[in-house]
Amino acid sequence: MQTNVIQRVGQVAVPVQDIKRSIHFYKDVLGLQLLFSTENMAFFNCNGLRILLSLPEKDEFAGASSVIYFQVGNITEAYEALKQKEVTFLDSPHIVAKMEHTETWMVFYKDSEGNTHALMSEVVTS
Image (tube, rainbow, N blue to C red; front, side, top):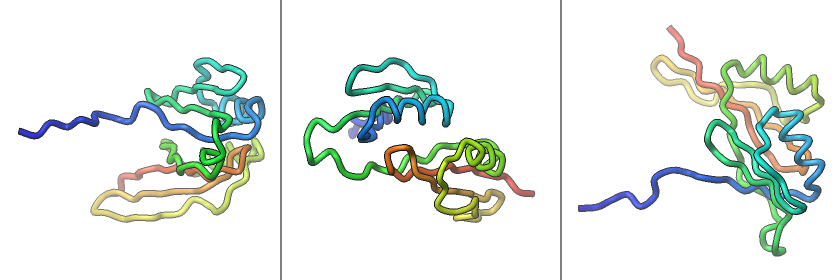
């Protein structure tokens, strides 16, 4: 009998270079809930997933982060709202996959620290 050891993702870490600048971006621009912060770290809640912004403890952690795909209800509205807040987008909202009655849309952007992340939306079609 096999049991699943891993149950869910509890936290995603994003390396940053400036903790104050990154807190501003994730809190004030993206609108995520700041749980708490220290001199070197900040923890945010994104609908139950904790995002850790952290000054790298070692050089090997200072590179690019994984891409976080933030799910939104309406990708066009989210894209336009974040453009108004001067978020740097790498492209425009576009379809990346079409399944029977669902389209998956994405748009990629840079955070304040140069990490690439994305907005995604799954649209049900008739």
